[in-house]
Amino acid sequence: MKHKKTITLVTLLGIAFCLSAFMPKQEPKEEKAKNLKVLPKNISHDELDKVMDGFKIALGVKCNYCHAQSKDNPRKLDFASDDKPEKETAREMMRMTAKINKKYFHNQKDGKALLAVSCITCHNGQHEPKSN
Image (cartoon, rainbow, N blue to C red; front, side):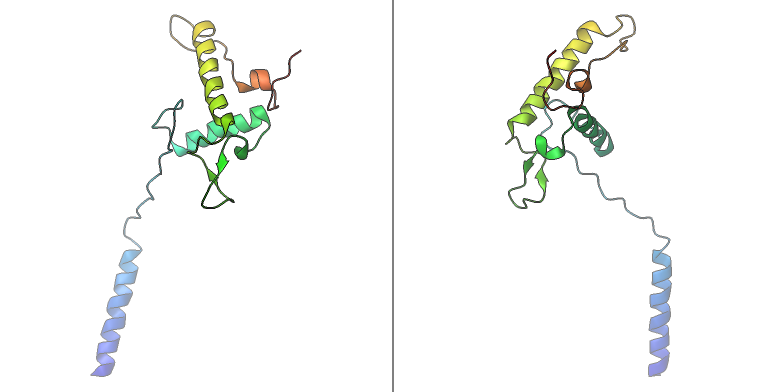
């Protein structure tokens, strides 16, 4: 009798385990970026990474150039923090380039960019643009 109960229990656990393999997987919820003041609040994580990668290339810097260390863990960055003035400078530069592009480089008929000014236009891979 005891052997029969063990076999039944093992069989039920095996069936439950096999069925769980066919259950739909829940995707982890994408965490939204915090403290966005220029970029769209609903920007996806992938799109935000692309923008930040563009900044790194254009200025020849790493993330910690604009982003402060986390107070809880100095090995991590606090992306929402405004502790570093370089972050606000980056926001000002984003507003400036958007204004220049809107005023001078957009086709008035369809609104599409003919040319565009971006960070690399002036920075050329340097954190400070060089004046000629």
